[in-house]
Image (cartoon, rainbow over all chains, first blue to last red; front, side, top):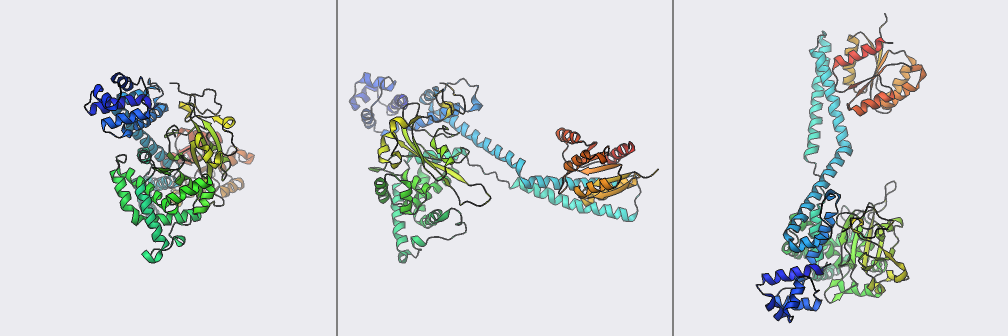
Length: 488
Length: 124
């Protein structure tokens, strides 16, 4: 899919560089007719050729491979299947075309849609609050009760029926007292509306942070180094006066989450003075974080990254991961971290030259709401809806605490090993529903031999046809289908 | 002619005060109950010509009291005027379905309450 966008990219980069086709072809060691075919997407540009063209143009390879455009066209594709656009004429396949020909307009569509989603979320949250907030119901009831008594008493006072002094006094007192109570009730209802900040997680903000993480390949060398510094400080309390790593604990909200979350939070807090300068630098200079909210969210993600790097130092963790073949329970036990923390760290093993298996990461609540996503090329993770119901991330809720795994083949033929486990987000409380989240990792099936979770599964016989999002999926006969497909 | 007896079932003291005043000035003998279960007991023990019943009661709510009244053969034909905050057509219909004889929304005009009670108590 990426290849149809490469031609456009090469052409516009060439034009930006002020080069003719003949000149670029010469510099890149290609024939001019062949370059022409490449630019018009009539021939693919191999990785080698792309590299030569990039060199010849003096640009980074990443600028030509169309990755950003691919993500944009994927997102436009998802936007086009939103029911709000059901009557639209645009065919799904034309998303690439739009991005290729008019990337500015594609960007506009993306921005408008995200803004629309944010507004919709806010409205839903507010409506929900209005319908279910007990304070509101109570407040309105009080208002009505006081108005009723004031009205009735006032009618008595102003009415034809003569009143004796005692009766007059009594009803005047009621009007006075209930007027005061009415004022209080009105004031408190008004303040409910005034400081009622419906804080909704902006889809736009999350998208920006997702793009940021994706762009940086989820690896931050400078934070890894800073983490090493923090680790040596924590090991040696005499050095800096900070408590030793094992004793790190305490704080008002450390009750929830168990030991691993407590120590994670403590480490994050202790690491902050060392890493925050670098985090600020990263966040303020990266182009994918245009808003203050996005930067704030990214800061939080990076401080979590740093804490993970302190608890699970890169080279050590990579070695251990390879040795145990990415067994998350073994890694969790070895480093004193939770399953989720180990899974998350495994998805950050992207140090150039020292990479682990490439994993996509996804986290969902039981209703299907995705709370974290890190896609990899070839495996798009849904932004605005739920994923294919056949994905193990959902099946894992049926057996909380146990890892569910399987091979899946996407409609385009890409094959992946999926593994997921539903974990308790906070400790169980008697009488309350469990708060479960499902954590899923996925790696290319070709790497399954390096991963313990592929053991015992015969790729050939265990390969299940799956999709990514029902509306976009071409598997017409799938029994798990949530919605009819929109055929391109 | 003996005075008609009305039972007012309402837990807000100031509203009770007003209702008691306007109904007694209109010539009715007025009893008051602040609780649904107590109200049912009184209805079964005494002879009332009409009941003014608030829907939003603590404990046994007004709808449940109404259902109990209609289910009781000893209380057949007892007019029940329902007082409610919700004035929508759907609430009116629900109340009528369960057997309310009349329906008054809060905040009410005193004259309306008196008129309804007069009209329903007279039929007994």
